[in-house]
Image 1 (cartoon, one colour):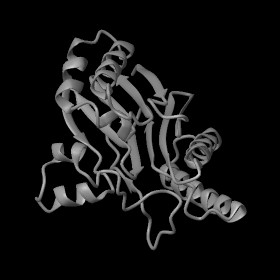
Image 2: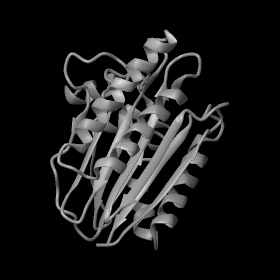
Image 3: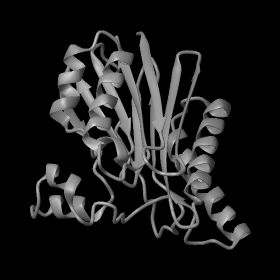
Image 4: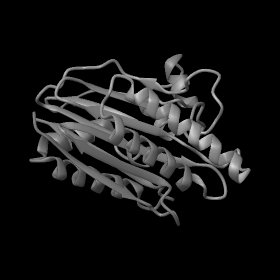
Length: 242
């Protein structure tokens, strides 16, 4: 199994980049993490930094253990809430989070909020994680289509994020799947996926000779579609398995 990857993050037209990305590789185990910070007083960058640092540090200590993803979410949530109390800013330190872990035996991912993970196989789109948002809820009950999420007026209204007290776990974790040659993954903040549709992701995937070309071509589309708009921070991580 050969894994190649490419990470990118840009502040768009905003003053500060409140997204955060990270990765760690050890002994043929891979961890990729992406977070999109939310909240007032520009504390989103602190929130995203806390969850990425916590998730990556936990992976460094434990590796891709059976309960790693669950523990990473729980520990990140605990540290976010502690920081909110310390700074007395309960409403201003929140973030999304998406994690992808790969080993020679299995692949798992988890997410909360509207940062997504896309799965492709043999250059074909398979699926993406379902947002914890109002528009996604409308898709689930059949009132709008999946594509209509991108331009929905409530697309930024999130129902579950890191940094809000949970009655039950707010995150979702996938079933483990087997690694296969020809798999491709894309982790993306909403600032990225809102400006490129799945059809264009696939077109770029089919043309790309390597992971770097795939990501660079998609970023060009994101920038083009964002021209003349107040572009949000955008971040993405691409992963290929051969």
